[in-house]
Length: 285
Image 1 (tube, rainbow, N blue to C red):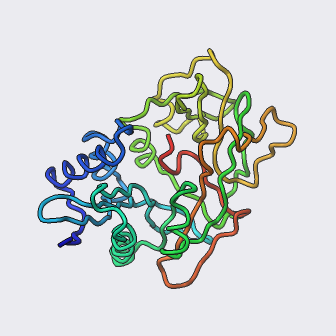
Image 2: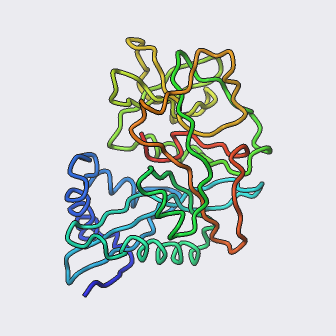
């Protein structure tokens, strides 16, 4: 019989999750003990919130979210980012993902979090939307070009959703043990890049004022390959006239969709044109 349990953040619980992730995603070598410790336990916004399903003492399924801060409809609040879901091959098709996710959202709401946000691929999006009541906000834009991406609006008042990064949270994010981030300067800004693993192309995660310490501590980005990638939503960016173009769908392994669910019981939904969301804000890189 399968028993649902709250996420165990002790060493034994983390080890259980690591073993399940290695079975479910054998190609994802970065999901090791160091990564899980960083992701689940070291986040300054709060420890991970999730649920596990056990058959006896064997972990059958796992779902997790991690807390974050955002400005939502003009109000700062905390929410959670939907992250890992894994079901052992012997237990697939039993509805465990939906069951664990709903329990996780109840736990997150009880802890005072106001929303769940996430990025889902084409295969997982229908489950989030049809079974869990998420809003499909919009597929993320993916662009490639040369040099820094055009800056967006400096003000945040126009956006109904924007993740907030203070110095402590940014240091934590850039300390991800699975990545090797780099920086480059552009005027008064420092731009953070991550390797995409594709022909030396680097993804632009975000840019910050030059006096923000966390990005400034990164190693500089070389200029061996000037091609850059930008992924996210931000209608305030002036792409027209910039040396950037939309990446054709045939070059994308899967569309990535921004999804959102209100946990306050207010039925809030996001206008895609009023969302600022970038690669730094989730776990693509």
